[in-house]
Image 1: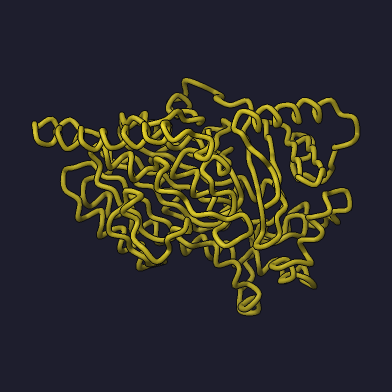
Image 2: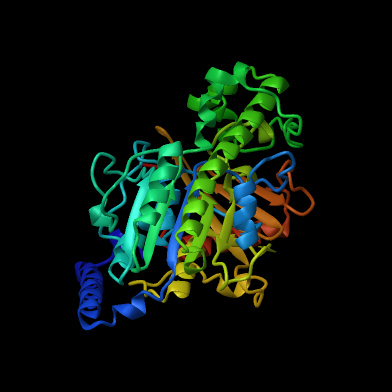
Length: 447
């Protein structure tokens, strides 16, 4: 249920629940039962920005990602709830879909609104149950100049890159016995936006090729996809040659490798403090980047795999399986339920996501028949989209009435839009999307 749909009594009850949890944690410390809390695992979440899942890592030097994957489980079919920074982060912190969290698009864009501290989030909930909490790096959820105490993250640190990696390592080394939860939010590979200024300086990487769907002329696709190239950031690549796109894709990989070095600093700190087997480590990204797929850059009013398919690794060495890959369809909605189950933390409201522990342990193949993704606006251009993705099918519904239907098994590059051809899956997936929107009270309207 959305915050605006709750009655004043419901909101008071939720605040009372969190207040009671805080009081209970304090009482536990006074009676000595805080020792039980100390057996809970630490939680480290490392988030990149605009990093799509790269199924082919040929030539990519990311030894620390490989190191983390060897310590845990890599999910090869993980998806964000929206391909935009602010609302994606709102989901990761609250376990709600963006429209339920009240953050439907980026702060500053049309329809954008900051995250409300009244909504339970990782900082307040885990902090109220015995965890020391911290948030370092990019926030992008409003209150950019202030502290994050009201979200349960005291001692805000605004740094990036190498300084953020070092600040994260220092924070980890400063922790005592009490379990901790730390969110380290990096900016890259979001700096791909600099490509229009430094493109000529970028060296070609020999392993980089143009995507197989590069020459899609978008003629059978919703009109907003074509309009994107004439609006705002899409104009940055107008007139790009294939060589320009190869530089774009090369620079993108350079940024991922740079980020991997920062991850190494953090993993070293976890190991050097003997926290490795006491710490759940999560690596993911808020959303992806088009990288020239369909001739499109960055992100915008489209729901292609390059934009919504993200990396996700969950590790707890010594407790959860190591060096495993799971192809189950999962969503960022599943992160908080999983962390709560593993750490024995109670969330103060029903979560729509699923606990992935059974998948990680190999006891369950699939938890979701389908996952859902949403989109609202690009700067001042509102163009809402809703998506349902199954194992082999994807259906997109635009607020303007445009539709897309893709058979992902036969057409993984999403080149052939089957919407309007009479295929039975269009009606089935449209009904599934309508049911989800009704259940989550999604208005899907312009603002």
